[in-house]
Length: 111
Length: 112
Image (cartoon, rainbow over all chains, first blue to last red; front, side):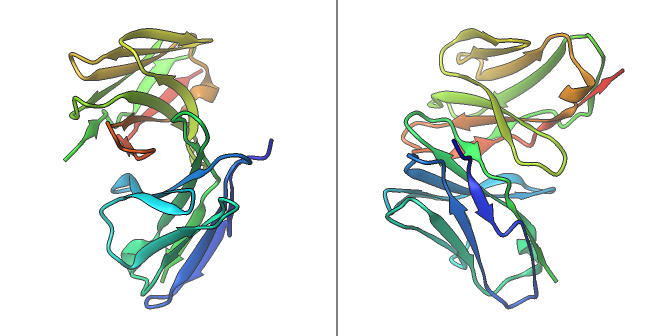
């Protein structure tokens, strides 16, 4: 069974640009969550989608948005990038039960 | 603010010893508790989960939960150098969907 797939693995952007990250969950999993990981703040919850609906949202500005498609694949978008957005962005999928399985992440560097 | 606290370490133990990792949480309504292992440059990997008070064992790993004290721990028996990683405690609150609150992690170093 394939795991959670995130693309791209690495991204370099400049301030003011926007970026879209993609996540394909484990087959059969309908919940996708996004987390931001930085050395200073650790792992912080961004949002969760279930059956194409945002179910929970963390404390991030509106520049951070996401969506989920009918095949459970999810994308997150960050607009007007800031230097502080440099982080590892992790996607996790959940099936029945509450166990989250993480993808390899997208390492975003904002210059 | 719902918080999960861990000692950042590093926790250094000799090979073959028992490593004890601790975590406290503030939300009394928390229902489920997870331990993730994260190697440097890699993503978190789920190694243990526990829902009820008491101990849960899986191989060399034992998770312990005390809801009255709002305390979760992870014991690693017969520690190996390959166990050297950061261990993240994560807590799921009531009615939180799948929104986990993570501690800052404890870095474990197992010395040969």
